[in-house]
Image 1 (cartoon, each protein chain N blue to C red):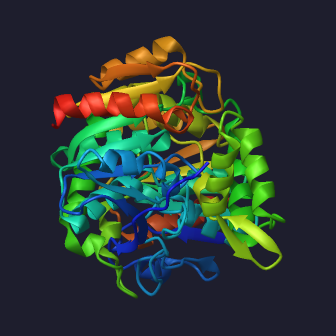
Image 2 (cartoon, chains in turn red, purple):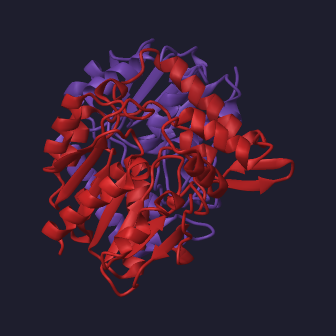
Image 3 (tube, rainbow over the protein chains, first blue to last red):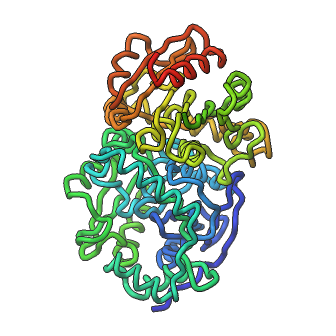
Length: 295
Length: 210
């Protein structure tokens, strides 16, 4: 499988950090930002982005802070920090309001930016990014144990050297075990661009601090309030297959799409990585949506 | 008796200095990152995990952690995780409760305020108060969550409420009852660090009973 390279790569200073961006298409065209999921990076859009650019858009995929080549994190307690990074990036690029094509965690970020800064967002394509299931949004049963585990994870992230992997191929195999629906070529692509060479092998670029956190308040009522702030057109695209990170019930998906005021399209035969598993169907939905809301 | 660490409030203009001036010898009262002589965190933003880790490492599992204002939550996290023998919070019982819609509105208003403040987006100064810290943590807590979380704090807790507290006075006793262990309330007219430190030191030295 031939996965094309981005046309441009930049590191953009957004004041308090630097964000890696990958670009396609005419920089004078309307801007579309592609937002990846947790522990991923912008190169996951190498297949989809050029096809969106071909619709007459300037497409920029980012590495979120703590991911890929972007700046580090000091904590995983950083949900709204990413909103600010995105708003600052749009300001630096000087091209708002933008469209978002956002996967998983990136979908939540797109929702947050659209709620906090509605003037910056023209529309959102949310690919299986409707948040965790309700039972994952309640405090743990044993809070002291959860807090102690957070302390241990913090210490490991801050103090322990990271275990190097022997090869990119080994990392790709690990990725495929965790995301078995990912085509092998894509698992290798994501591992290749998600890894950094160190003495003795390779480590994931994703900052281990991203996974550190303490039990905190974010519940379904807040998620609903957040989603109901969205005023721009939203297209939600989900798969219909069991998969890692596809944890919502059908009723939860429908409720959350309704909170967003979104149109919901299902791509049959796909799991969490809809745009990688069936890029043609994904593009057909995006093309149709843009023809309607942003011709 | 083991050590004491005091975490001053986020955005405190004079950082730990007023507390150091009032505290007995042996208390550890740092300028937290982005305040006084301590540089800002490398990612240039603020959350309670930094102070929690600092206090945890300083105490090594034993002693008293004091959290002032927004850092009361950091102190209570340490207490919930068994990282100390006792917790004192100063004006740290949260303000009036909000419903989720208002909490999200506030969160978004806070983000807009940060983005509108060029000094809070520009690189942090090498020392002195980082303007970003003045925007607060933006942490939201519901009564249900506070009840669950505070119930997990089984060590003794002293809540010092001063004239600057945002907690409605009629609600303080009820909130105190949510803690999992012994909890004591002291209400002071003045937020003066000397008076606050005196109340905490008295409680701590008296074996956690006033």
